[in-house]
Picture 1 (tube, rainbow, N blue to C red):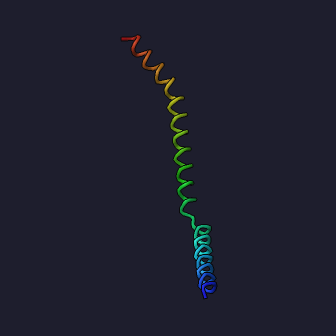
Picture 2 (cartoon, rainbow, N blue to C red):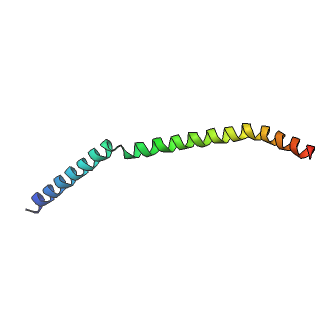
Picture 3 (spheres, rainbow, N blue to C red):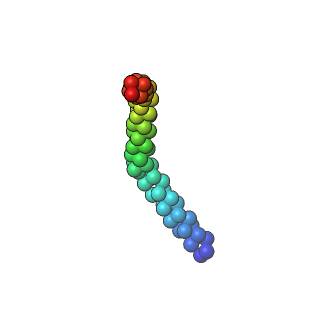
Length: 69
């Protein structure tokens, strides 16, 4: 009798684990979060590059203004 009860319990646990695994495989929410993270990182890199390129020119402009004063 006890063996039959443990079989039922193991079978139920197996079904629950299979359902959880299936949900995990089909879930795409994490993928979307990763995509947004990559997009944000690329935007940050683009801003850093733009500031670095414009910063040297802007520094030259301010130095010219400062020397003319």
